[in-house]
Length: 317
Image (cartoon, rainbow, N blue to C red; front, side):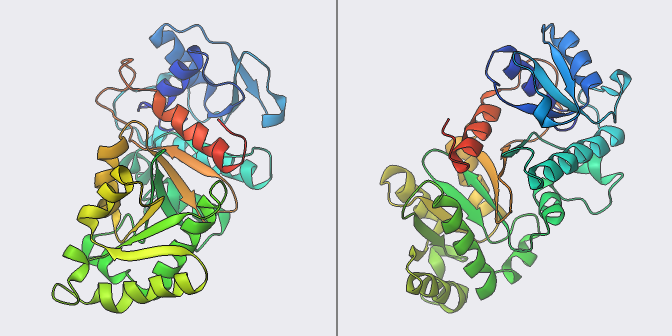
C-alpha cells in the first residue's frame, strides 16, 4: 500500500470503493486503511487475512503487517515509522511472490527519505526488491501502451551514470528488455539510445556511442534480436510514438528515459522491474505529500500497473 503518509493507501481505498480492484490482496496496515476510509468517507469492508489464499469476495482483503496504528496516520508528513512500515510491506509481498503465493506484485509509492531514516542506504523499491530476490542482473522499465523504456542506470549521479555505460551492462539491459517483451510480443523491436548528443556524431561529440554502444548492438543482432541504434535520444521517442518504429527504447541513464516518458504517459506509465524471478510493477509516481489524503490523487495509475502485471503473467486485462 506504500507509505501511509502519501497517496498510496488513499489510491488503494478509492480505487476499491469504485469497484475496480477485484481479485487483489493488499499488503499493509489494516488500521491505517480503516482510519483512511473514515477520513475519505468511504464505506469499505476490510477483511484481514493471514495469507493471500484466504481472500473473500466483495472485500478489501488485507495481509495486515501490524506495523502502524491509526494514530500513526500523518497525512503529508515525513514519518520515519511509516517509511519503515512501507518497506516491511514490500519485503513480505516479495517473499510471498517468491513462494508462489501471489502471481505478481504491484507496489504503491514509498518515500525514500522516510524509509532511509531507519534503513540507511535505501534508494528505492527496485533495488530493495532485487536484493530480496537475489537478482544481480535487473533493470527498471517504464511502460505505456505505446512504448517501453529500459535503463542502463537509474538512481546514480550523472557522473557515475557515464561510467556505467559498459559493454556488459548494455548487453544485459538489451537481453532483459527482449525477454520481458517476448512475454507478449513475438519479436520486439528495440532501439538503443546513444549517450552523447546526436549519438556522438561518429566520435565528434564523444566516443562511447561508437566504441561501446554500437558493438553491443551488433552483438545483440548477431544473437537474432531486432535491435537498432545507437539512436539520438532527441528523436528516438518521436519515432517510437508517431511512426510506430520501436516497441522499446534502451536509455543510458535515468533522465534520458524518465523525462520523455513522464511527458508521454505521466498518468498511464507503469514502472516494471525486469530481470527478477517474479513479476513486479508499480505506479510511476511518488508519494505526493502535498495532496495526500485529500481525494485529489488520480487512481488510474494503479489500474495501469495492475493491467500491465496481468499482461506480463498472461492473464489479460
